[in-house]
Each structure stands twice: as structure tokens, then as C-alpha cells.
Image (tube, rainbow, N blue to C red):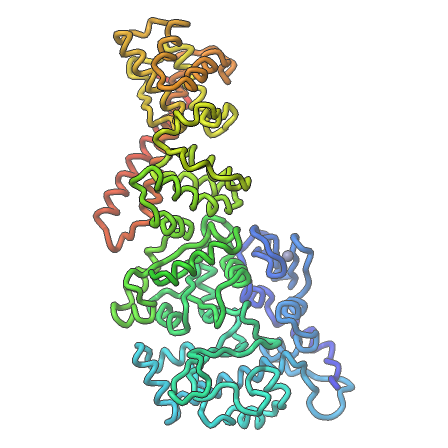
Length: 627
Ligand code: ZN
């Protein structure tokens, strides 16, 4: 029977246990002003933080799900402990000797979860000690062959489970743990034998320091368990879908840098941390899943969707690519923040550090690329992009990937990038993605890109949507060109066909250019004659009808069509082109490793500076009009 804890002692525990520190080991907290701190709620899934902690008042509250309370209820809820267990655990932590009332003789019985936590702590210490035994030579050898010395082993708490088979049980029984506790915690098997025997062990902790279970590597040829790696079975404490090895060591850096690196094995986590990649974690005996993703996102704080990065290291081989595709199929919210670091040599971080040094591990992470780009490149590599039909089938295969991204801003960025990778028109890619998203059928095979204009002659889809907001400036400028060509100088105010992203507008602009040339350079031919000349210069009858409609469609601006208005429109259109170039260059820069290619990087960087200057210039012009 558990005695009741003295009320005064509970109050002391509540006072001494700092809520910001305890919550902070589960959630990245940032100052939100007036003594409050903010983070992502650990009790419900959210993208923007509504979870608040007030350290001076010792309270937390989530405006999203309404969960709230003091430090005791937080630990109770997050660690799934009873009230008494929580107070006991916190009392140990802050050094309060609890007094029990009406508890009777003997020390009161603690709850099972808390006992399992204590047993694991004791087991981890026992195993770490055993690594120094004569028998553990083979384990020490395993470590040193992989470049890990004694200090490294201690830093990561690596241990050794003796072959004896009852050593842990004896040790923990001597410490007062009962058989049901040891079996329930997955430390001892039903048969009475230690769960792990003759293996090298890594303690798996929560984001605080609590050991929840172990991962174990086979060392001996006569190990009766054939699996190379064994993990603690699922227990009240250990849930493989919710644990990440290295989380306790990586937690602070993950919060500070809003970055987490997911590697594949225990030795990879060690190698990464020792190489200076202190945000590395690994899933244990299971694939990385949505729960793991949520865990990391919470620790990253993720206050800005563009900042958080989860980087997966994969082998460059087929299995690694398949793994990447699997991640892509996961939580859609997560994809935009997901990156892939592929080592072309196929070495994992542990071998990479051993063979090429610690800088190579850091560079592997620096070379990361966005996951969707990796996956799309992977899909595209299976097609011959030099052929129009190859591009089309690549587009059809890649479109569902992009369509699966629900975030509009993300998906429109992917559309643009996919069209760059394919070398296809943005609008065509956008339409295919939209069609896939609607669950529509792909275009018939004979709709080859080169002949699309002819074959789709009865298909008005080819024409731009007048209401497309992204194309408003293109449409307005084309209307001005048709309705008031005199407002443009002989150089068309610096406009080029490439300033028009929709190919119908671009084709129309080319026709306008040639219509003027054929009229001996003057553009005195206002009105119907001018429109007629343009209409005869367009390459297809569909465009003729576009010319006709644009010639009569009112300007979206209600003021008079002045020189200044035409000038501002042209500047705006050129500004959009420069902005696209800036984005492309930035994305190239992001893909480039400055360490590997400093010259190329610096060159691109100076190009970027020039483009940014032009952008500012055009921005001013688009607002002001000509001097
Ligand atoms: Zn919440």
C-alpha cells in the first residue's frame, strides 16, 4: 500500500522543480514576452505554437487544445505517470526527501512505470561498467575498429551485456527489483534469462535523460539470436515508434539550430556527433515514422516553416532511394521541411568518418537537397528528357508527387521547379498537376509536346485563364501592347518574350515584335490595322481569337492608359522575370556545396548580388513610372 505524501513536501517539490527546464526537455521554448515562453504543444499536433509556459507562475497552458496545469501535471501527462509517481520522480530530481503519512512500515511501493525507469537507469549503469570487463574485450574491439575510444564510449553510455545470461537479473534483484518488474520492463525474459546476452548495448533515452530501453549489436558467432540488432521489446516504457536514439544528446542543438539529422544506426549517431553534427538521431529497430517526425518538430520549435530542417542521410543505392520515397509518402506537412543527404560513395556516416575524416561527415550534411527535388530527380532519371515523349511521360510520373503536396505555396514552387527540371512550360506542368490532383486521366499519348498546338486546336485549355492572378501583369501588358502600342518605345520598354511565362502570351509578344518589323519599324498604325497585323502574325488560329479578345477587353486599371502606366507594367513584368531568376539562382546556390566548389559558389553569389540590385531598381520603376 502506498502511503500518502506529506502535503508540505509536495509543495516543496512543486516549488523547486523548474517548469521551464522540465517542459524544455520536451519542447523547444522561446521567449514570447511578458515572462511567457512559447513552443509547439506536446499534447496535440500543431504547426504554429500555441503552447505557453509561465515560469514565474509555474504554469503551462495550450490555447490549441486547452491542456494546462503545473509542473507535476505536466510530467504526469507526458511520462504517463500517476500523481504519486510523478512527485516521487521529481523529488529525486530536485533532492527532496519525501515523508509519507499513514503509510505504515517499510518504504512505500512505487508505481510500475517509475520502477521500470529506475530499473533501466540501474541496468544502463551496470552494462556501462561491464564494458570494462575482460569478457567485453570483443565489444571494445568492435568500437575501436570503428574509431571510437573509451571517452566516446562513455559519452554515449555504450555498455556490454555479459554472456553469463543471469548477470543483470542477479544485479537488479540485489537492488530490490522484483521478477515481474524485470520481465515487464523487457530486461529479463519470461524464462528468467537476461534479455540481452553477449552484446554491445546502446542506452535509448527520452529527450530528457531517462533510459527507456536498449539497442544491442551482435558480437559473437555463437549468439543464439541471429539478428544483428536487437531492441528492447515494446513495454510500458519503450515504444519504438516514439523513441529516437541520441535524442537526449541532440535535443539542445536541434532546438538551437532548428535542424535534425536522421541517420541509420547507433554508430552513425556517434560518428555524426563526434564529427560536429550534434543534431544526429536514429530510429531504433523501425522505420522513421510520423510520430518521430512530430517529436523532432516539437524540439525544433518550428516557429518559421522555412527554417526547420530534417535531414535524412541515405545510401545512394536503390534501397536508400526507396527509403526516401517512403518518407515522401508520409506526413505531407513534413515534406517541405525534409532534406536528403546522399553520400555518393555509399558510405554511412560511421565509415565515412573512419575513412575520410570528420570534415567529410559535416560536408555530407551540408550537401543536403530538398527531399522532393531528390525524389523528382529520381523519377526523371528514368526517362529520356531529350525527347518530347520522354519529357511527357516523366511529367506524368512526377505530377502525382507534386499533386500530393497540399500546401499551395509549396506545390506551386514545385511546379515551377519541375518545369525547369523537365525543360517544359510552367503552364503545361501546372495543368498536368491540377489534372492529377482532380484524379483526372492523363492526356492521350499522341499529344506530343511539339505538335501540341495543332493537336489541341479544339482545346481551349491551351489559352490562359483570364482570371489567373499569377498572370495578371502579363495579360495587362499584352492588352496595352495591342490597344495602345504608341505608349511603348521601339525597344518595347525592354520587354522580351521570356518575360511572358504563359506560352500563349509569349507567342503573342513574338507576333507583336514581328508585326512592327514588317511595318518598317514605325508604330503609327494604331487601332484596327495594328490589331489585324498582329492577328495575322500569330502562328495559330487559337491565338487569333486571343488577340481579338485582348484588343477589346478593358484594362484592369481604371485610369487612362498613359505612358507612365505602360512603363510601370513593363517594369513589373521584368521585375517578375528577375525574381524568377533570383529564385532559381538561390535554389542552385542551395544545391551547391560551397566547400566543394568555392569558385562556382562565389561566382553565383556575385550574380545573385547583381540580380538583387536590378530587382530593387525595377521595383522602384514599377512603382514610379519613367522619370
Ligand atoms: Zn495543445
